[in-house]
Length: 197
Image (cartoon, rainbow, N blue to C red):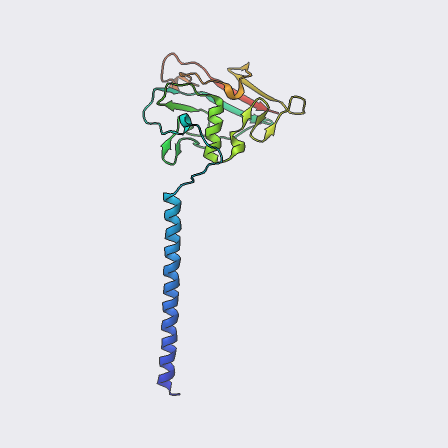
């Protein structure tokens, strides 16, 4: 076999390898693009924590603002709030949300209705897509259970006073932890402390 023929065959082999590599790269890019588009355009359709209609609709404008304060202590340690659950759910502002991890809840709603502490836990669980996060009642918070006759207890105070309403606690329409967050005068204090120990 002559040298030129060998070079021609080697050149053909190299060209075919390059074509295969480019074809493979193009296929990979197309697949990645399809996956990215699917994730962006088709958000989760099934949440592990479904919301009732009054919590799942988009809020634009507001009938009232309220800013209750929530502290959760589990086994002597303040439970951290995520930075902003409920602020936006797939681009949709929710009626109860946080702006930061301080525990100040922001109720900004376009409905003249009462919201409860249980509503907040539902929104939080929905945002986290975690049914355990949505649990709060007189015997359990998250995965921490406090049976009637057991080693653990679950208590709640509102403004320093014992309160047994737990998830049924209704947020006042004009609550504020400070005058800076007071939207409607006169503001009332709604300082909720949940303690599991």
